[in-house]
Structures are given as structure tokens and as C-alpha cells.
Image 1 (cartoon, each protein chain N blue to C red):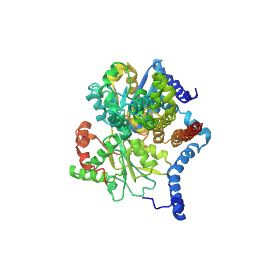
Image 2 (image 1 turned 135 degrees about the horizontal axis):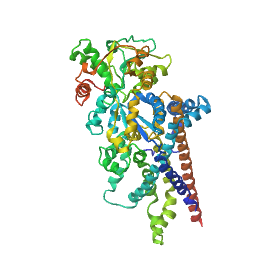
Image 3 (image 1 turned 180 degrees about the vertical axis):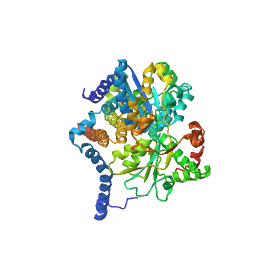
Image 4 (image 1 turned 60 degrees about the vertical axis):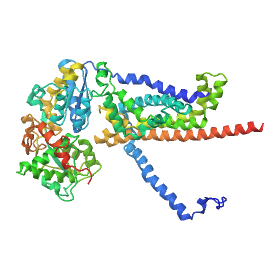
Length: 295
Length: 340
């Protein structure tokens, strides 16, 4: 199509300046209004009454304290489960061809397409007293729904695709050759994984874990359904934000919201750093292969 | 090996937190046990106060220190959650039919209303109007609600006690003034055409009206009306219509749960406490109408006399009202069209 266009001049420089500036300013304006102002406002509202009040809002209220702790307890097991599952699953679908592989790949995406509220209800219908396993669980003194295990389960469910989705393209790009070479040179499965596969995929894994964790901490809908709304017991940070807001404690709500926003910003920073690391590593790898070729 | 570092670090972080989970789950049990009070949406502040008074009183009486947890959401979904296994020791829901749904499913024994004084009713309440300061739309009584340009905020009758009571109050306002069923139906049909959003629960509607500032009039619990006016100084005012419904939030011990957990005695003492003069004063201070007439008389400034018609004015009883108006395919479904 573009054969007749001289490649010496980039098209963007050719655009008249009002178009360039107009587009840039429009994009900036949208970003400022939709992203920057709300984010800054969260911190402004949270800190409006000073640091001492902010600190008190976060740690003075036992229910808020518990919500922060609970979120820190719910997210890691969910992320860990998805880490193990994600690596195993990505491995299976990229290294083997088996019947049902396409279905598996589609199923992995299901938590993204199902509404979180529906996801929560699915678990209530499974583990609730009117569900299949509820009466058995109660007979054995186990609690899932309306308790921490239920929160972890639904969180793991809604964040399931993150690690797998991140890893499948990475593992597909790397290909099985290096693994096969390792095995043919006498490595056992464990050695192959840690010395050959892992170095290739670790950035992808970490990237997936970070995104997964961000979503796990911020999840509202699914957790709302299975939480039972018990203050100081099953309220995670996002649920606590809603409650505080509804109880006319706006500074408290914004204080908790600012912690969630801060975690999101940390996620963003980590993500950027990882992308940078990855690019660096690729550049180094390329450089080293070139020197090898010269020798 | 440097290549292992990130995973090892992540794993250690994750595993390091796991024990916390176990610790966090088994909360330190106060020696007298724990109660879970599953209630409807706007009673959070009330129960917080009552719990703060009951816990020391109970400890003084029995020497046992208990803790009480509260769960609040829309009344209908709370009943549903208890059915699904939320281990409520007591339910303090907005409507008789929500509590009775637990009896139908075997969680509460037959005749629960007779096991507490005054048919298990420790207080009553009603539905009133909240309007913007100065009442710019001139809303004085029920007919004013469907004047052109008036937007009404009230929760969804399918999930919320407040929502159902608003509907019943509007229906009864027509019927009690001599209107026919057909006229009542026309009135509520138009009323819900003036309702731009139906929140799930009472507190959600309050947020919509008071904090997001949507709508001209908020049909809400009397107690919620007083709270929202107090929380937004100079912005809102209460309008008492000429008549409204007598709302009866019954209380009950959830037999199946207290017998399994061994908390029956505490749960019963907790609900009995509501009938004491002290608790009746707390109720009145939170703008719930105490059943103790002597106490109520002291609060007539905040809880003015107005005609409160009973549910029997428009249906045989609460259960009949539930069936007639809110069951699937019943009157509310036939008059409400979500898209405007």
C-alpha cells in the first residue's frame, strides 16, 4: 500500500501543527480530567485534616484496622494459588497439544467475562447452606462463605487469568527447544525448570503476579456477595471504603481509599520497572549473541 | 544464583503471611461468647449504641464478657444470607416477611413472635420525606410527589425494607383517603416513573440523595431522615406527610444457630434488653419510636404524632402484603418499568 511513499519523512512530522498540538492537548485534557484529578483528589481529601487525623482514620478505628489486615491476608493466598496454577497451566497449554486445550484456554478467560457479582453468587450457591456443599461443610465445622476462606476463593477466582494470560505468550515465544536441550543433556524436570525455563519466564511471572495482586486487593463485587458484611470480620478494604462513605465518615473513606490508590501506584511503578528490566535484559542478550557471533 | 531471587522473595513474602491468616481467622474468643446481629441497612448507629450499653450490663449481671458483631445490608438480602449460612444469632430485619422467611426454612421455630414481649416488636417506625433546604418543589404530602419535575429517591422494593415500606405507604396513602385499588395502582405507577434510580438498600439511597445530591425528595425511614439531616447541616429538611405506614421491624432469635453455637441464653438476654427503659431511650434518641409509651411521650418533639396506618389497612397481614405486592409477577413487577 505504502510503496510510493518516501520513507525518509515520518508522517507525524508532516501533519500540520494544529493537528499535532490539538490531538496532544485533547489526550492530555482527558488524562487530567479522568485520571489525574480524581487520583490527586483522593489524597487531598484523605489528608485534608492533617496527617494526625489521617493516621487516626486509618488505625484508630478497629474495624478499619481489621479491614486493612484482612486485605493483606486475603490477597497473598489468592495470588499464590494463581501463581502455581498459572505456571502449571501455561506450561501445559504451550508445551503440549491435547484434546480440550482450546476449551481450557477459553475457560481461563471466563473470570474476566463473568460479572464479579455473579462470580460471588456462584460460590454462595456452591458452598452456601442452600447449596451443594453447605450442609456437609457445616456438619464438619468448616466455614467458607461469609468467612475468610470464601473471600480468598472468590478473589482467586476473579484474578485467575492474570498470571496465565501473561505467561502463555511468553512461553510460546521462548519455545520448547531450550527445555528439550536441557533434558537431552541429562537434566531432571526440576533442574530443567529452575535453570532453563524459569530464567526465561521470571519477568513474565512477576508481571502477572503484580497485576494479579493489584486486582486481588481492589476486588469489590465478588467479595461483597460472599462477605456477609460483618464489620470487623469480613470487610476488606474496598468494602470498608463503601461502608465508611455510607456512614458519613467521608475522611475515613478517603483515608482507606488513599491506601488502595497508593497500592495501585506502587503496582504501576513496579510494572514500569519490570518492563524496563525486561527490555534491558533483551538488549544485553542480543549484545552477547552478537559478540559471540563475531568470535 | 541470582536468577532465583525474585521467585524466592515472592514466595517468602507469600508464605510469611500465611500463618497470619490462621491467626487472623481464629479471633480471640471472649469467654462469654460472640453474638452476630444481622440487621437491615440504616440501623448501624443504633445497634452500635445498644451493644455498647448491653455488653457491660450483661457482664455486670452474669460476669461474662461477650462481643457482638453487626452485619448490615438491605433487609431482603440479609434474610437470604442467613438462609445461605450467615450464622446470625439474632435477626433484626426491617419486615416481618423477611424474618418469617427464616421460619419457613426451619431456622426459626414456629410462634417466634410469642416468645418475646409485644409480639417481638421492640420499636416501630415509619416512612417520611426528606427534601432540599427550603423545600423548593413544595412537597407537603403524598400527592405532591407526582407533580411534574419532581424526582423521587427510594430503594428497590425487591431487596430493601425501606423500598417496600415506601411502596406500601404510598399505596396506603391513597387507600386510606378513600381511593380505590385502581387509583392506588395509578398513583404508585406514576410515583415510580418519578424515581430515576432504585438503590439496593436504604443507606445506598441516602448516599444517592444526601451525598451525590440526586433527586428532590427522599422517601426513607424516619430515623434515617433525622440522621441524614443531622449529617448535612443546612442542606436538607424533613417533611412529615399527613399519614404514613406503621413499619414494624420485628426481632427474633435464630433458633437453629443459637442452639448449634450454644448462645441461646445470651441472644435472648440481648433481645430482652431492648424492652428495658434504658434501651427504649436509646431507640428514641436514634429516632426509632419506642413501644414504651411513657418513653415515647418524652420525645414528641423529635417523633411527632401522625396517623400511622397498620399493614392490615391495605392487606391481611405482612405476609399477604408481601405476596400481593412484591412476589414475582405481583403488583410491583407489573407497574415498574426500569427504563424511562
